[in-house]
Image (tube, rainbow, N blue to C red; front, side):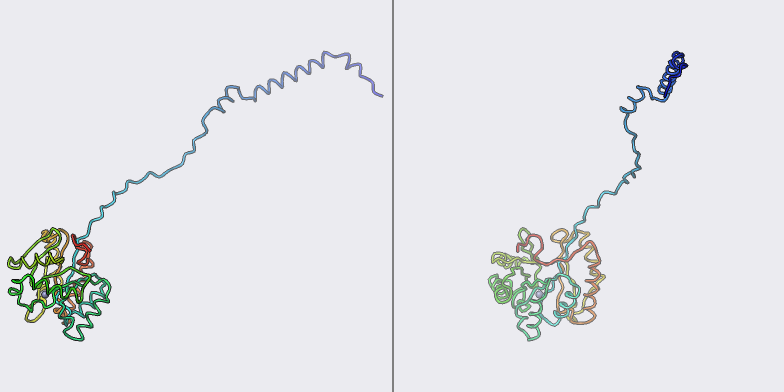
Length: 290
Ligand SMILES: [Zn+2]
């Protein structure tokens, strides 16, 4: 059986005192450890800690260089097909450059070999074939140019029989131009003939610089390096018919000999390394409509 301890009942004041003391201590401890209301509020409303990430400062970059427009060179060969044409064709195809040949119609039918070269020219990529007359005036220019009608008919003969899709012509022995607004006549006596060619629908294409040769020996008068210097000089002095466009005239027959063929190859290889120039076909000359 359990009996209540009389002492417990006899000393109620002592138990109460203990209870109050414990309560007081608890409140004291609690209040000591509890953060202040102000502090709590501050914690909730304060900004979250900023995470500092080290970002590399952008370095100032040089402004992009303007793309410089290249000067165009139109490499043209006159008077083929002849004994030099095969060499010229092989070299320009191996060097993979665009080249324009101005053809003399009569030369296509002069020998089996030349007809075969003509076939090769037609098959070749990156090659443009233009009209340099049918008879080449049989090299009697003064008499020939007196009759504009004959000049037009001679050009039409090559046009109809060999080059029906191309109306770009070069007058034999004359550096005259009839392209859109570009009109130039080198020898006044042939002016009427040039006008007649234009009236008949032809574009007359002259040249700015010629790679000269000795007509007796057919040897080149200038080396590849000398020609490259001439090209730089003509461009620098703005001496071309159309700014930054240069038509270069060469003749097939010169390159039948090894020494001259080597000069042609050297010229092309060095020209290709010059970043300021690019080669183009005659039909892309300014003002020529395809
Ligand atoms: Zn010619």
